[in-house]
Length: 214
Image 1 (cartoon, rainbow, N blue to C red):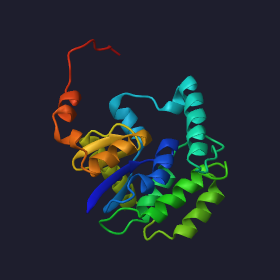
Image 2 (cartoon, helix red, strand yellow):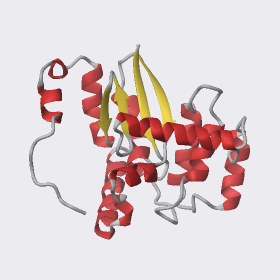
Image 3 (cartoon, rainbow, N blue to C red):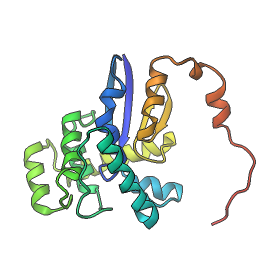
């Protein structure tokens, strides 16, 4: 059985689209998926980047593109009333629902994505968060230190692997970034011979070039 680890943050529309498309991308394969919510802002800080929604022309393009992709793939997507927003409450709720030593299941992750990307409401609205928490019935208090630690450790582990954005998929020791990497992920899991050749390592190797100074 193939194992796929999905690194995601509910603030990302690309992570949402990839979540919805993942079963189709893996159709016909025997696989197990592990969902790992992480703090996208932590990745941005580590790698010295800004998020797409923090750069105005990029924000405009991002939402035009994701809505086009959503209608192409018949996926419901409603832009939330506020974006970007702080996703910590949702990330912690996800980990509060995870079993001891485990990760959140697909039902929980789906509920959290739909909370953000269905309806166009404020993802951090107090009443909506309260209702969502009641519905998911977490086994731990989302505000507890134990849950905060789960999220911290998951984000740190992702950074240690070299994860720099969401969604990122890990399979067979390789990382695949972005919703548009799903065909590549599927090919790797299906035994595409390209992955047995030298290209993966060769093309991922650093090369000399100009480095921009901050």
